[in-house]
Amino acid sequence: MSSVLPPVALPTRSRPALPGWTREPLLHFLLLGALLFGVDHAVNRRAGDADEIVISAEVDDEARQLFKATRNRDPNAEEMAALRKVWLDNEVLYREGLALQLDKGDTAIRERVIFKALSVVDSGTKLPAADDKLLRAWFEQHRAKYDEPARFDFQEAVLPGEPGEAAVRAFVDSLNNGAPGDAKAGLRVFKGRPHANLLQSYGEDFAKALEAAAPGSWLALKSRDGWRAVRLDAASTARPASFENLRGVVLQDWTDATLAEQRSAAVAALAKKYVVKVEAASK
Image 1 (cartoon, one colour):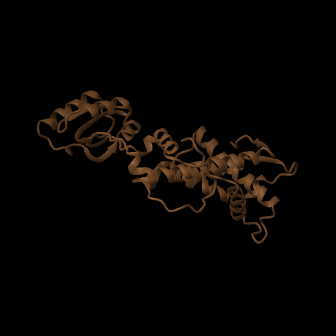
Image 2 (cartoon, one colour):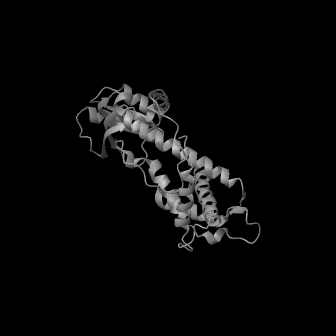
């Protein structure tokens, strides 16, 4: 994920959405970033240099709480750095908006000032000329976004507790000898699971074993979280995307990414005017 999206939502051109786009975790993360606009600006107002920005412990705490509320876990170091970046970009835009007197008529409404300041930044962006050579190169660099991955339909019979290899293998033998899949276990049915999801959920060894499995037989497979009783029902092979079929989508994606990079660079240039300090997190 190379490009950095703008810290506030801007109106965008209409475009055909890719299948499953709204279920992407990245979307949820970016929406979380938008919630950070609501962090009280007062927590950063300290006596001292007006060109100093302090990412306070209160800001970190608020970001951590918002993240946990949407993702049911604490952010890791990389995610925390990204949340700070969202907050910092908005703080820079807010101060630049005040300097340009964009707060008139919107007193104390931080989000509107940020939006106005970003609109000023956005007016300075300019797309380079795009031809098929450029778009094809961009398409190849981001091919994973467009290719159809290998997908798997499978069932998992889940034994209670944390059964070891011997127990799972014995259970698999009983299943292959005619016992129903939900006997003594909870039965989970998965349809169209992409290969990347298998890697994330079960681990590389499990994914390789399921890829090599013959449909219809129960297997004892080792995952990163222990042994599983699994039966492959069907699998489809990966299919590469066609640039010609997706040229319009690729053009819009390239446009969005290029403008986002330009906006991010412009805000980063503005941020150089400030001294940024990070307070120690509260205990």
